Length: 330
Image 1 (spheres, rainbow, N blue to C red):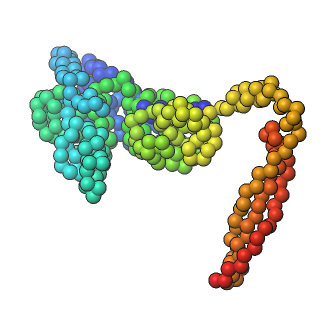
Image 2 (spheres, rainbow, N blue to C red; image 1 turned 135 degrees about the vertical axis):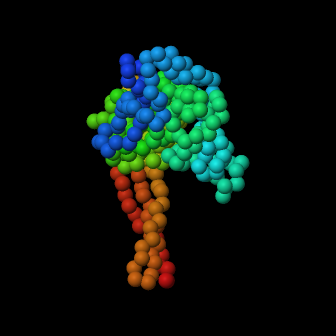
Image 3 (cartoon, rainbow, N blue to C red; image 1 turned 90 degrees about the vertical axis):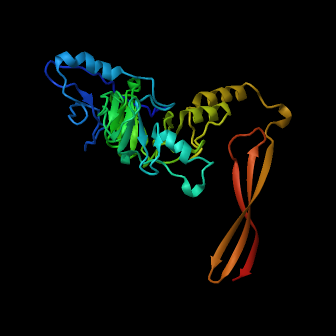
């Protein structure tokens, strides 16, 4: 079974090159048929010119306050002003937890549109400014990873963040480890590139177990053999409760062949007692069908007789017998 972890990546390394400016990773949308990598680019708007004698000072700005600020979702040195309600939060997840919870009146619930964020507040000096990687007042780096498209800041580059132009958002786990499937509309592990069944909008729906929206979920997502997606933890919880089928299509979520082989061996090793051999049981189930002919309705009650060996196994015969036909005037 193929697994996909919706946490993707790319390490950022800040280096100085003789008389050139310091490189910073800026993610921008590009029209390509593959998931994009975040490539080092120069951004004069948010990165001041750096001369060799200033390298030490710049390194201090890169590390000053690193990992000391942020929230449970991101370590960053800035807060954002929500464009939807004009309130200040550490990140969009903090906003959504506060504004889209069950405690909020339904008509007031909303999510923050991440791409519309335009103002950030430096956590060190408190200066409010337009979205950029370095504070215009104190010069501190507000996030070692910065995406100008998603307005994402994060000091924890071990996540290996990258921006996928196909998804339109940043993901983690390393762009070299994932590809964007344009039919499914999401990023999958390269291990599934030629083997996964394509389902349009595979992750553009809620998890069938916990009902969290999968496309931008921060939890690991797994692709089942049928092509449907589910949280990895939710699938594990289903397995712990002996549920091995996809909750959407009921196809097996695991390779059950070994289990069936084990059951076959156990059945073969337990012969049916002689008194019950070659015994048959009848299972009768009524089936009601309503037919429309002209202005009249006919209700047909069919009884399906299924004959099975007493020991179980395949159906031996199937008999359809019409018992009642009732005419109902329109």
